[in-house]
Amino acid sequence: MTSRPASSPHTGARPLALGLGAAALVLAACGLAAGSDGWSWAWRDEWDLVAAVRAPRTLGALLVGALLGLAGAIAQGLFRNPLADPFLLGSAAGAGLGVMVVLAAATGLVATLPASLAAGVLQAGIVGGAFAGALFGVGLALALAGGAGRPLVLLLAGVVVGVLLGALADLLALLAPATLRARQAFLLGTTAFLGWDGVAWLAAVGALVLPLAVRFARALDALVLGEASAASLGVPLARVRLLLVAAMALATGTAVAHAGLVAFVGLVAPHLVRRAVTVTHAALLALSALAGGVLLLAADVAARSVRVPQELPVGLLTAVFGGAYLLVLLRRRHGGGGAR
Image (cartoon, rainbow, N blue to C red; front, top):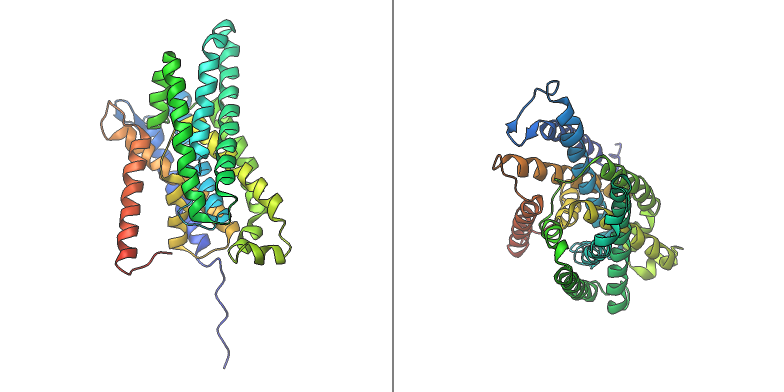
């Protein structure tokens, strides 16, 4: 009697990837059709508008969601906590503070530059400031928690850091009133200002962070067994943690710099993947990025379509649906249904 072969740890990963890819294509087509006057499929007649506005916004929303989903998967694997999220660990608040510092400092500087140069300098400054702020926020949370060995303490430290850095960003906004409008758009989260330059930045960061994260996926698999077991397997914990924290900060900072505080995508995307399939971290990271892109693109299409010609902030929609998902998850766990 022959025994049945053991199931692969990646069983179901390919169908899920194909399903998410198909959903991304459908949503991308909807994004190209969704305009301020309702949906229009006459792309040939509106090609200038589609190419200049709708296409970069659609692709940018997909890339922002992918970076947030990837950052969430890195955080949850690195800190061995399914509630870990880039926003909860202080990286998003740090990125927000970095953006506000750049906006406040650039108010007078950019005005002295030629218009063709000012936009590029400001964009580069925002991305750089968001990255530095995100790395600072995560580093401060790790320092307050005494490392990543105690997940609950780390999450509490992240909340404290988030409140502190958020307060500093509010103070900067009060001291520089010219930044208040940009601050409001940043807090609500929006994909309305994504252009081809932003798409290029997002794609470049994604092309850097995803291979780096996958490169250390086996270390994340080892960390599931605990830090002592991972060290006994030869994992250089200090170097791996530093590189993954930097990758998470870069992904989060870049996403926040281009779309503001888009809540819950980084937390929910890895959860949805784990509930659908059982995979190692190499596949989980890639699938979480794809799931995050699909989630944010769906929210972006909805934000443009619910109240035409007005537009809802995409961050509000992700917060509502992400919060509802967590409530359902907690209710199932409380009721004994469990959650993967």
